[in-house]
Amino acid sequence: MKHVMVVLGVVLIAALLLGVGLLRAQDAEKAETAPAPGAAPFKSDMKQVSYCIGVNVGRSFKAQDVALDVDAFLDGFRDGLGGKEPRISQPDMQKIMMAYQQELVAHQKEKTKRMTEENRTKGAAFLAENGKKEGVKVTDTGLQYKVLKEGAGKRPQATDTVTVHYKGTLIDGTEFDSSYGRGEPVTFPVRGVIRGWTEALLLMKEGARWQVVIPSELAYGERGAGRDIGPNAVLVFEIELIRIGGEK
Image 1: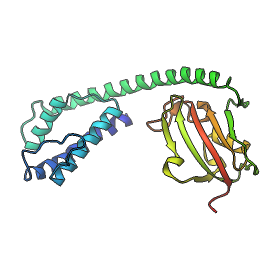
Image 2: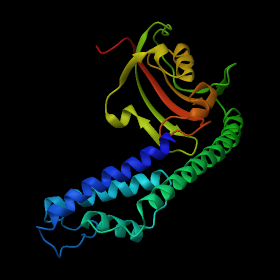
Image 3: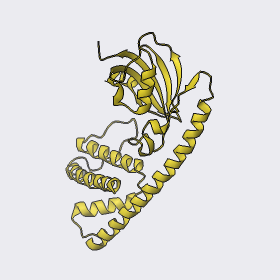
C-alpha cells in the first residue's frame, strides 16, 4: 500500500507543478513544440521546467511499472486545470481509484514474488558456476572471493574503520554503485556494512584487491535494497582495501 500511495502522490504533486507551469507558459510562446534530442532547448524557462517534470513523472511511472492511457490522463488534467466539470462523478472517481489501488497492490505483490523466485534460481546457478572458476575460494558461509592483488599490510579487526574503493554489480553486469565512479574512496566501520562485506574485509590485507561474490543471505536477502537490488539478489563486488582507518 505504501508503494501505491507513493505512486499516486507523485501523480498529484506532478499535476500541481505542471498546472503552475502550464499557466505561466500560456503567457509565453504558445506555438512552441518540444525540440528533438540534441536540438536547442525551449525558449521559455517555464516550458523547460514543465518538460523536465513531465519526463521525470514518465520515468517514475515506467520504473514503477504503472501503465497509463496518456491521452485520457491529459484530458483529465486539462479538465481539472480548466475548472471544467469532470466527465466522471466524484463518488465514481473515488471508487475507481480505490479499485485501482487494490489492483496495483496485487500487481506489485505478484511482481515481487516472481522476481524473488527468479533471482533465487539465477543466483544459485551463478554461484555454482562461479565457485568452479580457477582462483575462486568459497568460505563456510558461501561467500566467494578471488584475489586480484595480494595485500602486504595487516588485516582489519571487527572494531576497526577501513577506507576502500569498490564497484558493485548484479550478476548480469549491471553496475549499481561505484566509489571509483565518484572519484574518491569511502570510509566506514567494518561492522557497518552487509555481512558479506564484513566477512571479506576481515580476510583481506591492506593493499589487497578482491572480486567478491556475495550470496543474497549475506547481502540484502528477500527485502532487496532500493530499485536496483531486487529480492534474493546475488551481488558482485570489486573491493580494494586501501588502508585501515580513515583519511590520511
